[in-house]
Amino acid sequence: FGLPHEFLRHGYATKLKVPTMAHLVCIPPGGREKLHRDFACDSGAAGRELTFSLFLAHQWKMEDGGALRARIDASEAIIHDPKDPKDPVQPADDPKSGDPEEEKRCFKDVLPEVGRCAIFRSRELWHEMLTPRHRLWVLTLFAYRA
Image 1 (tube, rainbow, N blue to C red):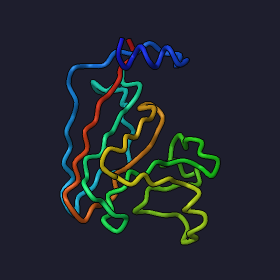
Image 2 (cartoon, rainbow, N blue to C red):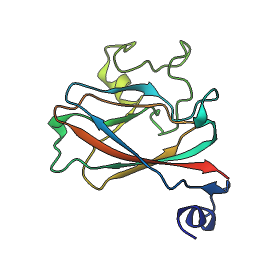
Image 3 (cartoon, rainbow, N blue to C red):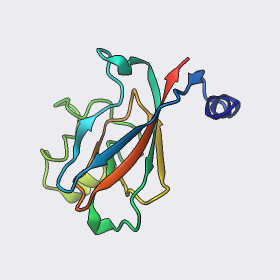
Image 4 (cartoon, rainbow, N blue to C red):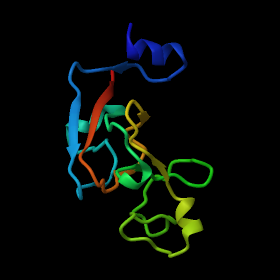
């Protein structure tokens, strides 16, 4: 039972296993996580299937920054390689265009409000954590392919 069972029960195609350990991350004021995926072929992350990020930021406001920026297009489809020059998206600190409407179509920001949980496919979603003005805590759990 538990989380893997619930995903299978609701039609998720891959059988999952969840370790008994989670990662507690502290992003200090002025810090950030650069653009990445939570899956890497050449590391121990190779089996990661889903990422669960639970935000622990009490009374967070939009002006506090620190959003999780997911690289998706206007239809909310995942952009598979935002570093590819043929792809219309570039990392946030190196935008291709100054057009705010074009940039808006290339990502979705998830504010780190306490209790909010972002769940996404580790192998597919390019994302980054933007710079927070205050210390930001995130508890992350990875579900692996069984």
